[in-house]
Length: 180
Image (cartoon, rainbow, N blue to C red):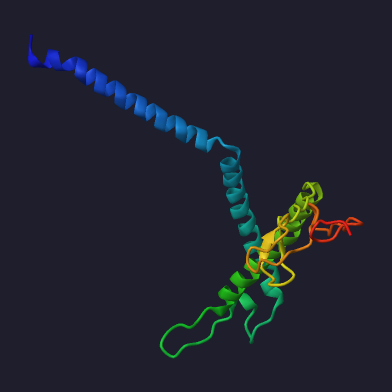
């Protein structure tokens, strides 16, 4: 037997281990890609890019021709002459600003506000948790709600219930607990 025949089982074992590693990695990638939020994000990016091109066309072909600019035909062709070059094309920059503001306004009024309203409508009501501490009336340090003596100034504090409301004193008893 040659040495290559003896090495073949180790080679197959290593190849199998690499194959399982690749299968696990690709399986994880497949699970990642097929999660709902990744697919939704990809669809949103494609639709957003298409929507942006529509808005850019609307701004450059409809809005800026309506705005006259310094003797030129429209705002999109506005150029500030420079002594050392062809000039600054501020009209194209203003087109980009108008496009951005239109996209932002449309997204805010037609996506963000309705989704926020929808989420607020169906969001479960938050129950405020009962307080766990209260302030000492003498030193104003935070002490546990059920404490009857302040740990900081050692002053006796009146008892309260679980909601922080003072417990009425029982009749016929003094603070020391003796009947008078």
